[in-house]
Image (tube, rainbow, N blue to C red; front, side, top):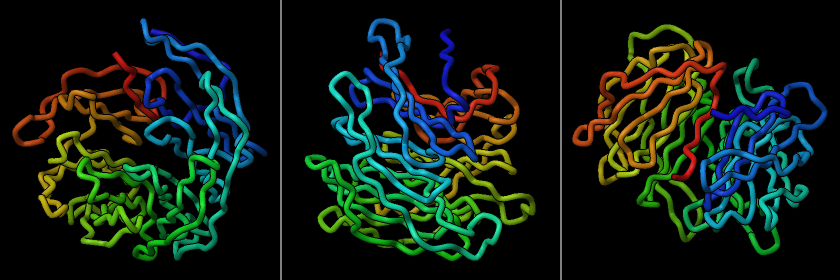
Length: 319
């Protein structure tokens, strides 16, 4: 076990494609400028060594990701509704923000959608485009991703149900479908992806919570299994993992709900071998490991519970 200090409230992590660098976003609402910390990852034992910090010219980052070659770090700035691109230097350190765009708009939820809130940004499988889910505007903003000139160029917009609150977006392994989790209405939208045009078409939207549930809706994270057969989503409030089967046409079939065995499952991760799902229960200080049935995709009896303070993001280090 290793504890790295020197960064305030790290809220999201991103591991480089080669596994040699780790990036952490510092989420401190009210601070004039957020920072992203860079760390070298030992290939021998996975320990970290600090490389430095880079200001993001914005309030705080809610999500970090990279292109498949690790040439650039993309971030979404929840506080200012902005997305940005930082170059990655040869030693894994980050250069200054090279390109940034602030979204415009709002939504019908006065408390949560008074302004843009960029919550997630991901690159397309071929690295030609990047897409940002904006909770405040009920839109997915598309950008051309120019890795030679290190630019994000506005390209498209996809409007979602007003008040839905798009939060996290993930591509399926087939590259032809993507899934958008909407926090405020606790839904997941299945999308067809046109790789040539870099655009989405909405297929269908599915509820994440049981019809008789009347509590708070705060859905959080979504991941597709490496096999492409199953999709999982986490729900705070209901404190559960929703399980779906994925059809060849990209449509979803509900398999059921699995108790997260803790409070506020904000983030979760699937092990690289696809055998386990680990859920970070932020408000009960636990990481719960659940086996994934290889035939049905259902989450089985808890394999282990690890106590750790306020877990909010999980990534797997290379082995």
